[in-house]
Length: 124
Figure 1 (cartoon, rainbow, N blue to C red):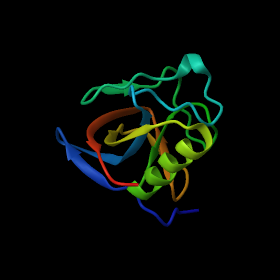
Figure 2 (figure 1 turned 45 degrees about the vertical axis):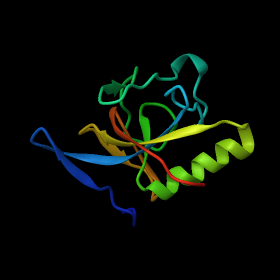
Figure 3 (figure 1 turned 180 degrees about the horizontal axis):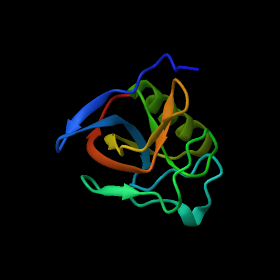
């Protein structure tokens, strides 16, 4: 099945890479949803490639990849959800993803690595 919302690609160092958006805690850690163990949360840095700590798995399960939202609207929804259900402030970043990726749904995909390229600010 083909997902109706396509992944947008951008050229980076001669490669055409998937782009997307990542929601993180205020101290730039993964938010830990989807059964993520506390000890596997990732500390992100701006303009640095961050890799998964396990083998990349091309499926829609929670393990084996880093999740990326395809559109800013998905991040806005997740940002609201985190505040409403967990009282957790979050930050949103535009990102590039690795060449290994798996298109999971109209909302998101998963990949083996992510580089945050820019923080986005908007009123909620």
